[in-house]
Image (cartoon, rainbow, N blue to C red; front, side):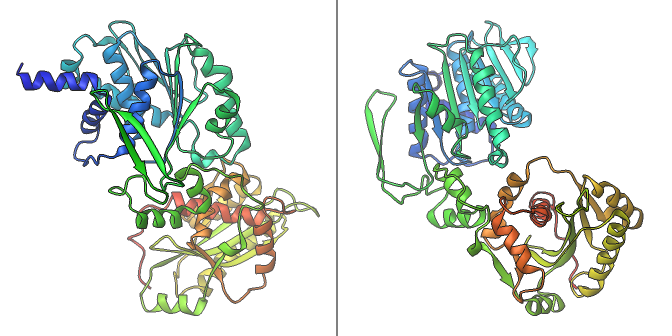
Amino acid sequence: MSDERKVLHAVLRSDFKSFCLKVFQEVSPGTKYLDNWHIDVICDRIECLRNGGQNRLIINLPPRYMKSIICSVALPAFLLGHKPQERILCVSYADELALKLALDCRKVMESGWYRAVFPHTRLLNAKRGVADFLTTSGGGRFSTSVGGALTGRGGNWLILDDPLKPSDAMSDVLREKTNEWYGSTLYSRLDDKTNGKILVIMQRVHPRDLTGFLLETDASFSSLVLPIIAKEREQWYVKNPLGEEIVFERNAGDPLHSAREDLEQIKRTKESVGSWIFATQYQQSPQEPDGGVIKKDWLKFFNMADLMERARTGQRKFCLAQSWDTASKIGEGNDYSVCITYLWDCEKRIYVLNVYRERLEFPALVRKAKELATQSRQTYACFYPFIPDILVEDMNSGVGLAQELKSLWGGKIKTIRPIQDKQTRLKAASHLLENGNCRFPDDNPPWWPAFERELLLFPNAKYDDQCDALSQLLAYEMTERKDLSWLPYI
């Protein structure tokens, strides 16, 4: 082996940041690495954790700033390289994410360069699964999702990487479930409660997410908080590989990594995700939602004549759709059945055209749904002269309604089964209202006052059926629409 290669191996063995760079090149081939001071700071704090300077650490920073590669891929491989008998439990909010990170870590440990840098660490051939792989020395990396089974499992390290999905953050039940699972199940898996290591890496998603819970209940945790825009002047002290202290400074208003995202790009991100999500996930400053979910000054409007002119002249592609939220009963005091007729365009903008709201017995509900579909096709033929896509909530009378409509229009009917509570669903799509990607007619139609009142009072209004129909269509257009290139010019 050449002297140059020996030096390289020695650097990769001793300097965690250099090792992270090599891991990045292994798991992200073809992606340009952009160095930045925040990587030095994160690696320095992790080295302090690894070497016994502390045992509990929380790192909060925005998405897409290398936190998972550093903490869930590089760190377990580095730990097992130095101590192949180390036992590491890695947790993420979903099985798919946990498996992806585990696969990347195993890829690193099976690479030729890793085996040369750490010749005494080898994976056990009989136990080389993706989620659970062992070394020949009895250590290994086990991954699971929050709530997953851990019977018989233990570890010297607990690494939690984004333990709560952002779209679940507004659900009190799901947040508390995550916090409770940590306290009642995961923490008990730590072999040595005094000296064992716990690392939590996440973007903030709510004031009472796992970070908030731990900072309130466990004084042993220290935290590293890196907002995407500095809120005040920052100074960070780290040690280089020679043990010399280096100071990194950032002034108030400076971006976290300007070569990656400058202030103009960050501004566009804020406009896209909305102010609440931006403050929480990007600035790491979660605030309790104040009052209603939707603010009056978020509501934006469009002119129907202008929209029709753009359709007629081929300036914009549009498609017609409807969203049904049906009630289970029609008695006084029960919810209404609601149909929102809307357009979506090639840029995924949404224009609410009409809202129908009434208490209907099932036969009348079916007749009205057929009538509204036919009527909207005729009324808005300049946009899209075919049967509209119809979204139907797959619950209560919606099940039967979808079956009746499918017998006529087949694939145009999309059944939607909600998997989150009402407030979480609307909150997750609220940025489409705040940034103007969902708009309403500017001529104050008859249905608007009741619709606006319910929207602004949600979740404290007497009824929420119109909000349910709206959040259903927003979620569908936000997550389900893929290729829009087929939309015809009318």
